[in-house]
Structures are given as C-alpha cells and as structure tokens.
Image 1 (tube, rainbow, N blue to C red):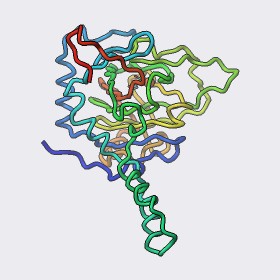
Image 2: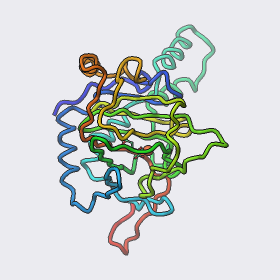
Image 3: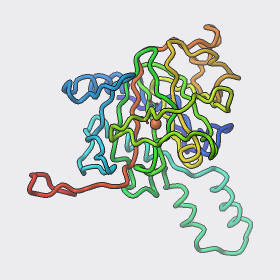
Image 4: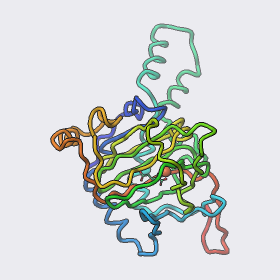
Length: 298
Ligand SMILES: O=C(O)CCC(=O)C(=O)O
Ligand SMILES: [Fe+2]
C-alpha cells in the first residue's frame, strides 16, 4: 500500500494565525487507507455506536468511567495502525532550532556538551512525548450527517492536552473560539469519551472571535497548548459551509491544491457529506484490570 507524503516536522504545518498551537496536514492518510478505515468502523457490531441527539459515536477501547478513568485495554489494531506510528513520527523539531545549534558549533562557539542531546531530543520528540503514556490510548469516533454538528465546548482535564483529529469521508469547517472570560456564562468542560455530552450549553458567541479551519477528508488536525486549554471548538449544524476561501478559513494555504481549486470554482461552498472524525488522545487516568477478569495488565 502506498504511503502519503508527510512533512518532515510538525512545526512546518502550523496554522500561523491561530494561538499556539494547531497543526494541519492535508493528506495524512491515502484515499485507500481512508476507505479501509471507513469499512472497518462501519463493520463494528451495532451496539458499539452510541446515539446522541445530533451525531453518533464509538469510544475505543471503551468509554471513560464517571471519574474519567479508562480501563486499560489495547486499541483495535485498525485504529492503531498505521495512524499511531505515523502520529509519533511527526517530530516537533523546527529547522531553526536544528540549524541554530549547528551554527553555534560550526562557528566555534563555547562548547556545550548538552547541545547535541537537546538537539536530538528536539528531533525525536513528538506531541505525546511528554504525555503520561507517551502515545494516545483512546479514540473517539464521531459521525456527522449533513446538517449535524457539535456545540462549542472544551475537551477538559481527563486528557493530556493534545488532540489529533483524523477526518474521513467528507470535508467540514471546524470553528475555534477564545474561551469566554470570567463573568460570561462558562460552558462546562467535557470528557466526551465518558459520554457526558460535549454539547455543554453556551451561547454561540455570534459576533465574537471565531477561527474557521477547513478539514479535508484524509487530513490531520493537531491541537495543543493554548488552542487546547484556552479555546473552545465546535462544528455548526449546517448542510453547506460557506466561505471556504482564502479569507474565510485560517488554513487555506495548507489545503491541497485541488481542494483550493475546487473551492474557487464552486464559490467557496462545501456541501456537507457524512463525515467521520477519529480523535486520538491520551487519557490520564488508566486502571488496570486484574487477572480475575482474565485480562492481563501490561
Ligand atoms: O469531530 C470533530 O472534529 C470534533 C469532535 C470533538 O470535538 C470531540 O469529540 O470532542
Ligand atoms: Fe471536542
């Protein structure tokens, strides 16, 4: 199977006009990989789907408990491979940090024995390097029909503050908003894996700042840092996303060329199709299941 052309490092894919940090990779999966994943997730036993009023979802390996704890279990292999190794291969090194330390040693600057190991840390680190399990252990699968969305919410404290979202099936505009300042009604945070509705009620903040990110099928969006902790995100319940244009979406320059051309031809309209998102996260609290249950902890 062919593999997509991935960028050398994550920082080269950063959405510059957003608070730090959001990264966008247009072709994270090949069309064949995308089709394969859709086949897999539609062949799960029906009860795996949980039906919410405006979308349905699957939580793998299982939903979180009421105390936001995950029972230790492996992810299904079709969700783990090839996505997780690919996520972990995206290094956080910036070309500047590497060349800066190279320049220093070449110019005969003071010798710094730590420089080389710091450089290699930079070149080997990825978005889950500092997370408790060093990799995602939980995937939420959300399916949205045209006209369905998700109210603005934050993902909350159950997870290490990184979300990797893989989009399948159709494109969508995803919105991010600065969190309301104290004094405004604050939306409750959600740990969507536990099943508590992420659609915490809040005003739609019309007129406030709103950043729009267009997510193509097969793409990856990574949000972390201020984007995770200081912002809300949501998807409008519309059948057409308007204004998918250079001025209308913050990641226009990172989109596939054919997508930009199609949007230009079509007046910036994205007709919604059924979109499935896979959100990869590291749940902080994991409980091992004892031998009594016939499952061995790691
Ligand atoms: O479908 C998406 O891209 C967003 C899903 C989401 O925000 C969530 O599950 O918490
Ligand atoms: Fe979310």
